[in-house]
Length: 283
Length: 297
Image (tube, rainbow over the protein chains, first blue to last red):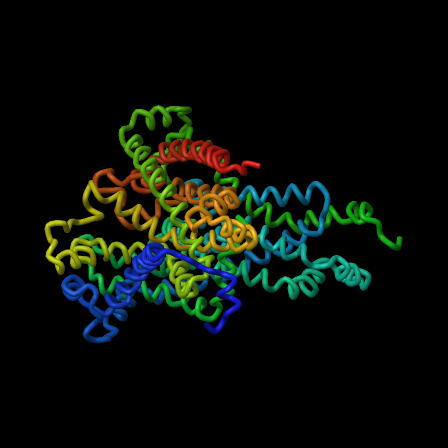
């Protein structure tokens, strides 16, 4: 053994049954993903007769058909717009708020913090219908603009709570010296806090990226079916047909929607996993 | 005034700070809390469709809900879904998390595999499982290949299997991520505690349930609560994409009923009456789960 110390410390002693069960479950997780990838290159008959076989040719016809049939180019553009604008707006709202909570020790500060903490327990979907009514009321039903405004609200509790914890780790002395120099609070937030808490901002941005890019039901109802407005998540299921779904095309479309997420995952691997952990543990 | 004393800073600081948090508070009230409160009012209206005129009818919607057999089908299906998904997912994920935390060979690969479903969108996940459970999809194709054709069926389009298939998808996407969360929690348990148990001759099964479980009890509760809320309130999307509540109403649950009544059947008052009921059931459920998993010391 190359690591005598490590092996001495831990005699694992796991029963073979446990190993088998765990890896059997891992296999169950992988099979749908494998099926997704190979089927994206197959026809319906090949999917049914040889579901596990690798494709006979790596032609991208299914991808181009999915792209044009569901107008996924427009969908991608909408998704990018919604995600980016909602991300920026979320940070603009959440950073000052979390700064204020972290730096006020009085009763109001802790009330505001509890206010957002309680928000973590409210499932967004509970208020779908009144949210639609609101979008009609302000004349933004079936527009992307409403999604720009609405998505930040849906993630504010978690973003504020996470950022507050990072803000608290900044020593107050830093701020006091900046204040002596007569810098305004906004200046202090931007030039003192934001650089220090950038790991926290990264965490929040990653979590929000996943929820904005992947969101479905609100995008469907609030954005509506117009191909120029709908996000790529709403465009994808339009490839399902009542009578004759081309599963290869459908799964190629699914892969297209997943590309941006996997690019981010490959670049930010560990950071993304940590973000998901922090996001869930805090809530 | 040097050096500044704590109380003085506090008083000086508060009003300006409140101003900085105001935009976020207003935003949250306008787009989340406000609509949630509006739900209680809409539940008292006769409102046949988003652009139709509405009128106040008091509690009539609740009478309608409680005399509607579809509502009770949805209640039954939600109970089945919560009653199976949560008790299966949480303990299995805990055991998986315990395993991952032991860092056996291959645990890094395993971690990546367990994480993957958390990255996939609801729409992508649903179309993958639509293809897997389709009449000419992966499952039936596999059964045909091994000569078990007689077992094949349209899984998502049969009354007997639609809801079960939806639950399989819920479990597929939830167990792995929850397991990773448990393993992160278990990593925080002091090594000495586990080693002491090992010296006492406690095998993994005993250590897992007699040592690790009591330590993570509160976390068990938190994750059970999150999963409970998700199934109860947010499963409408996956039902819509996988079965559309059918065939008949066989896979309609409460979350989907709220969606369907509002946007397909244009009865917004009914939909929100169910929403109000769901809201109180949700609170009750959370209180119960909290009680059950409350730390014992």
